[in-house]
Length: 337
Image 1 (cartoon, rainbow, N blue to C red):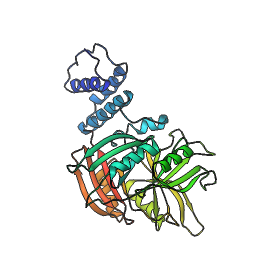
Image 2: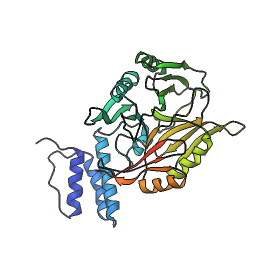
Image 3: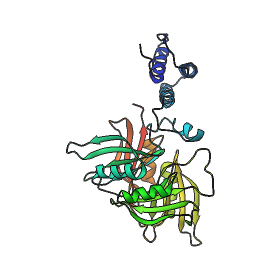
Image 4: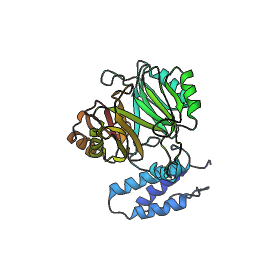
């Protein structure tokens, strides 16, 4: 008989343990099963059923990660973060959701320009793309053709790549136009170039220069919001999503020149709209520990409701709000099914 996966072995151990029986013996037990079983034994004695379920879900995700089915991790910090039970495996806490038409051609651009890997494509009855995911580095872009409720909305995205010059060249070959070629003179100090694709999205292509990322590594994909009165976005994100400002650089007049905001295990960047970099209201998919609480806080912070919290058929507790700048936030908590 073929060896069963670690996830299946662990699931049977937990199920039998919960009814005080012994699981059937494995002919070829996975070498990690014993250590996970010890954790499950502690789980067996916990008093709260929902806490048991949460820990069981976390253990299953750890098993899946050990088999290489989850997204690749960068450093020990990333490995810990990817086990967070409220996030859908393969996605981080913040993912750009780009709605453009035709979405299929946009996905081809992501593959050609950024060596993206298509992970999912869900067609609508008319042949358009209802939902798709393309992995880029250790992040992802979610894609859709949209509909009347969710019209097209190009976005600005900051990508960290190994070779910005080669990536920049591929974007031009794939049909993008240049803002400027990669340069070492960018104010950030990174080697940085910028392009605009044929769908209207801005791509800021960079590689760290003169500094070393921490043990958690770098996120390959970071949304970038150009805003009017950008300073007001910081308290909105802090209130609604428990965001943390990692670095806020302001002019003497108080204008936000650049800020990095962290939600969970991911980041996005903001600045005051200027020159060619004007507001681009976009869609953002955020995973939080409690969708209902985040939805309520977002409304208290000035957002308007798109959709009240509900249990979505794809296994998330999901809701939607629109902030004062016109950005849509799809709030979610992975329910583990």
